[in-house]
Length: 375
Ligand SMILES: NC(=O)c1ccc[n+]([C@@H]2O[C@H](COP(=O)([O-])OP(=O)(O)OC[C@H]3O[C@@H](n4cnc5c(N)ncnc54)[C@H](O)[C@@H]3O)[C@@H](O)[C@H]2O)c1
Image (cartoon, rainbow, N blue to C red; front, side, top):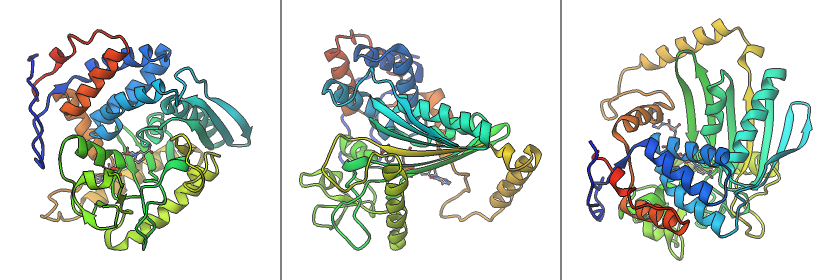
């Protein structure tokens, strides 16, 4: 049933403010129109919006609906080129280096997956770097695209020169990026296994989503500009800005150590650079490695060993304070099925910004609100 919703103002610190939901198909239609109007060819607009909508379906709104207006802003500011054509600038053995030509990250990421998968099918492994593109979005998308082809993938991604949200363990000032790592492996006839995580406690976009929704964030996520713990996302956003803590709680030195390595694998090998140096355009550097498991083991052995491992893990007694055991990636795939059926919630602030950008691009958005459905 399609109903028009009068948006309810988010409540300060409410756990979950009421908000309208939109069908993924409608968001795809709106989004493709926006990115085409912003200068992308249809194929690229579709790649970008498929990525953003899947991120929101998976529950990562920070890398979905939020970016629909942010990416448009970056294109309109001339920061990235909607017509950029990423290309392989160097290829040697099982390695390839991609120059993104200033294009949108998803367009460069698409070439990285195609190239990595091609090399893996030929040689068992393909190692691809990406630089000089915009935000790559939800990093798990790239290993997952490999797993959907029966391959295994892993990615290390930094934020080039601009990633300075995470302090080193023992420090207060942001020095490196949230530096995500992502892994995926196919599971015959089932959802792939998917790990897609920052080496900080949380992705920065999730703090900004909470800020847009006037919600507090859990204790242990962020500090203010003086290094004091806070639950107020505004104290992180600033100015002056605070910091996001490295992953690991009492052993946060481990998150910090992982984050440092991601700067090297994602930032140095790609040529995008690390968090040191003069601030430049925001961009991600990626190292994507794709494996063809058939070069390493028989398909039946892979499937049997993986299923055995999964059943072994799931056979643990359940901790009642958590309530259930889930496989890596299950939260995303389960949320994806739920949101496919129920629609994708979009908060007032994000939706009004999407509409405002679409209007600015000259699109007729008069009917867009009417696509809101009750959740
Ligand atoms: N492009 C960038 O610069 C950039 C930077 C940072 C983060 N990101 C993206 O932000 C997104 C969010 O990252 P995040 O670290 O906040 O994610 P998260 O904390 O929500 O999830 C991390 C991982 O934990 C798994 N998980 C969660 N709950 C689980 C449970 N109960 N049992 C088993 N596994 C579970 C998820 O499946 C996921 O693989 C990711 O898509 C990431 O790639 C992108």
